[in-house]
Structures are given as C-alpha cells and as structure tokens.
Amino acid sequence: MRKSNTSAPGEATPNHVTAEQRPISTVDVVIFTVRQERLCVLLTRRAQPPFARRWALPGGFVHVGQDADLLACAQRILRGKTGVQSPYLEQLGSWGSATRDPRGWSATHVYFALIPPPDQPLAPDAQWVEAGAALTGAGPLAFDHADILATALARLRAKVEYTSLPAYLLPQPFTLPQLQRMYEVVLGRAVDKSGFRTRMLAADFLQEAGQEAAAAAGRPAMRYRLRENARPAYFPRTFAPRAR
Image 1 (cartoon, rainbow, N blue to C red):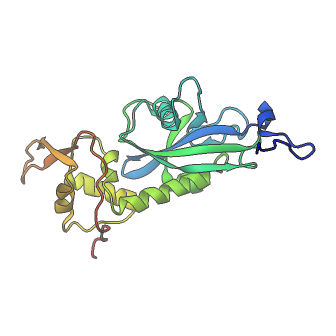
Image 2: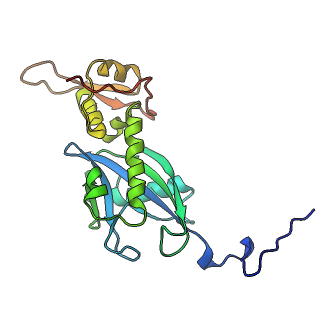
Image 3: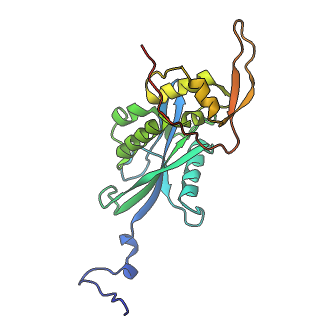
C-alpha cells in the first residue's frame, strides 16, 4: 500500500521545507596543543552576529562543493586555523537543538584534534588559551561551546589514562621523559615512572630516531618517532599516580 504523504493543516511536509526551515549544519573542531607545559585549546573571536566579539571554537559551514564528508570539513577548518594537518583527529559527537543558535534549528558535528605547537603564526582572530581558563576565565563562549569543550576535555583525559594520545602533542623526535611529562600535563598529575618506559616500548608504536647530543654528564637519551601510520596504542591498565 502506498504511504500517504498528508500532513496536519499548516504543517510543512518533508518535500516542501523552505530554505528558512532547513537546519543549519556546521562542523566545529576542538584543537588541543601544549604550550609552556599547559594544555591549551584554540579559540577564535567571532566577527559577525550571532555572538559577535565572543570567543568560540573554530568551525564553519559544510562546503558542499568542497568537503567530501564531515572529516574533510574538519580537516579544512583545522588547516585554515593552524596551517597544519593534525596527526590525530577524532569525532567527538553532535550537538543540535532549536535553541543553540538564534538563527534557527542548528546541528554541529564536533571533532577534537591533537597537534604539536605549530610554528605558523595564528590568524589575528585566533588565540591559544589554557583549557581550564577557556571554560572559566575567557568570558562566556558562543553557542554551546563551553559544553562542547568540557566534553572534549573529559574525553581526552579519560583516553589518556589508557592510550598513547599524548605522543601526538609532541614535536618529533622526542624522548621518553618528555613523553611522560606530556602525560602529566594532560592529566594534571604526576605519573609513576616505574614501568613507564617498558610500557611505551612494548606497545610498538614508537621507532628509534637516534640519541640526543651528548650532555656534559650522564648517558644521552634515545629519541623516538611515531611509527608511520601508527594508530594510538591501548594499554591494559591506567597510569598510576606517582607515590608521594
């Protein structure tokens, strides 16, 4: 039997939705890096309404003729704001409602990215902000970006407990003490050094990149790179806090 396409009086059918009634579709990217041993997130100041002059996460509309999919859109936004391609980009989730954007029903698809500190200067409307201060001290963020950032920060810290994600925040090559320090910066606490080296090397996501230049005293440390196309390593247990 053919399904009826009738609607209640005054209700638009799916085939007769006007341009004004179509949901707004965007992609936002939570971009993390570590600067001066602080976990930072990239914010941009909005130039136009809504929320003009407020800080926001980098984002934009999907370019139908340019973006093959949501990931391509996220990669384009990331390159445009930082000039680099992230070694790690993960879909965080989607936020949508009739009230998050005063222009109308809106849905945004969110990714979070991890990058080493980029050498390229930022655009004049962009700024690295310590992640905690972005939630509490940068003024209210546009849209529902405070909720999105808090979710991204919680996801990152939860995954760092059992994965090798901090390696994506380091310029390569790096030493294992530098990698351990990156774990501590992201987690906000000291990590027990016991077994750290063994756990990292046994996960087989690193390859040797030569020793550091000889220091005045002590044995020079080995430097490492991520193996080509290496996926994040997953560990069977979380990292124990350093004993006091």
